[in-house]
Amino acid sequence: MSTRLHLAGAEDLARLMPLTRAFCAEVGIETDDDFRREALTPLLEGCPHGAIYLIGPQRAPVGYIILSFGWSLEFGGMDGFVDELYIRPAVRGRGMASDVLYSLPKALKEAGLKALHLEVLRDDPAAQGLYRKAHFDTRDNYMLMSRKL
Image 1 (cartoon, one colour):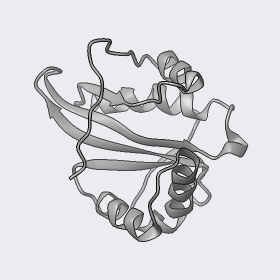
Image 2 (tube, helix red, strand yellow):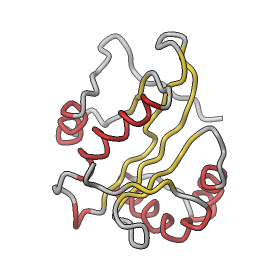
Image 3 (cartoon, helix red, strand yellow):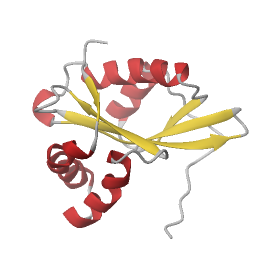
């Protein structure tokens, strides 16, 4: 993998916050810094339910990917969900997201993950193309449904 990934820890919170703020603004998620900080902190402190990787140089990351872990009988074990993937607009188009989406699943498979899932906007053909190139397939008989608790 040519794109550097760094498993984020508590010391990375200050570098991660502006990136998550930019992601939320770009996709229209209305949250504030306190809400995001409370959601990120357990993962940064080693919570086993997910992981955050910074993309690019450790001191000045250009993006991040957040994974959540679960269990699937259908897939035969632990699965994961790409919760967020973000690359700063100024450096998009250089293959970093593709590199992450090819390389990280291989490492996760070696660690025992059986499947990796993600969601994509129905009207975002560019993102869909990126994910298809990285071997993510649509599941025609399924759609993601959510219930906010």
